[in-house]
Length: 171
Image 1 (spheres, helix red, strand yellow):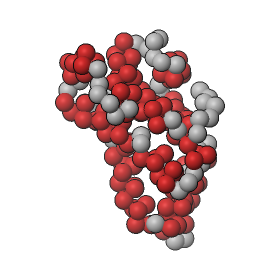
Image 2 (spheres, helix red, strand yellow; image 1 turned 90 degrees about the horizontal axis):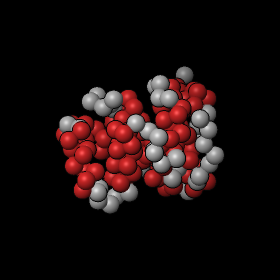
Image 3 (cartoon, one colour; image 1 turned 90 degrees about the vertical axis):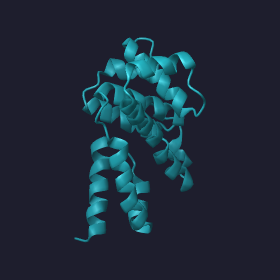
């Protein structure tokens, strides 16, 4: 089996496990293998969580994916968050604006949305986040939030706009 075939098999297994269309990754393996090699390093960065709690990490990722309006990617992140043990009630609350989330997760949700929107974060929220989080945690949040933009951007670059439209989200 070639290295390329092994990668394609791994991607197919990922698609099957998460019920996610990762055809853009297969295209990358087949047509831009050097880009895929570098993309694997990005994926390691996008999954990095050292200082953040599991729930803070996933609420930030979900808020960011909502901002990017990528239904398939949002569903993938919801599935991954569930797999990591986040309660369905929290995920549902995050999708519905966060009013029933615990206070610290409401704060993270609103912060991640504002950061992902590329505007300024409300000063009171920024101050609250700086008091609640270490500089390292804020940096990890920044990486988690920024990484949400990459997947839908690559899909759009391929003209896969259907893959990045709102879909019915299931929990």
